[in-house]
Length: 165
Image (cartoon, rainbow, N blue to C red; front, top):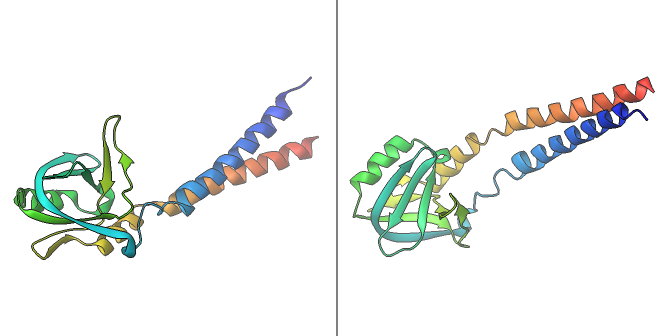
């Protein structure tokens, strides 16, 4: 029994499925983490610590167990980090999802995504700026192009192998 045609069709089917997975998960559901303005909760507190990571800034407020995460997708982290260090031990207002969504960061840590930050009436990063930057950095077009390539080559391979039979 010749298994080559079956394996080619299976590979083609997997290519098509992977293409659809990319389309749905990375393009259609890409902004699912972005809350609506109505579902934002403001938390007030003094900055206890600021930890700069390659993919964002972790912020800890006095009196809160939660760790807040300002993602690299939100904008210019160097400038924001500098402003936050100047505000250390001062009151800030951090906007997060009101439903208490926690996102795993490492094996031991979870955090809440920040969707706005201000201090003493001065906005450091607004909700609209963060959402705009979040959408700009989502790379939907590139992912969609790769997904369509997987789907196209999967369909082409099936078509080509069925012509040979």
